[in-house]
Length: 177
Image (cartoon, rainbow, N blue to C red; front, side, top):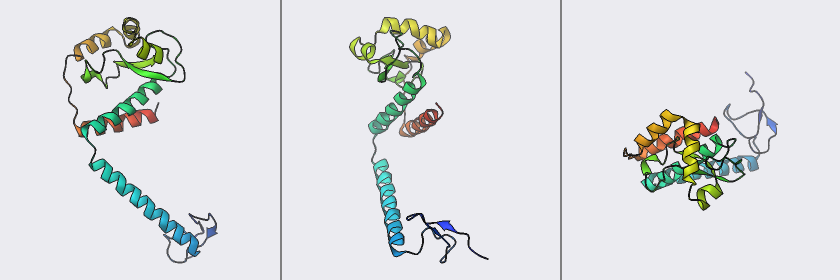
């Protein structure tokens, strides 16, 4: 039985495997060496990733989750106006919290509590909360708004495993947004 021609992973030339059906490069020494170097570098990089993952703290996971969550909020709200001033959101805008993270850390990752907000309202007008509240009621509805007020008093403690799962969930949501 003849082996089918393959494309070398290094030089991109067509070749017929002679050593094994799993052969990934042609038989040129330079291609074999370069492929071997790439493979070792990739393995080393993966090992470094695994080692970094082992030493991550709760704070590191919280930061990563915050970044992924904020990215999702920005993508979710990219075609909506600012939650506070109702102006079209520019190229740069924030994921603004109605209930602040400092006072209500349990709502940090609550999608009803976080919406696209222009930099002016979020950073220079301290959230522009009066207008935020009026438009939030319209955006999420009265029932969700009332539930948000109830949830603000409930404590939330996320474990590392819960944060890892949430990171995975929000990365998936980002892909589908």
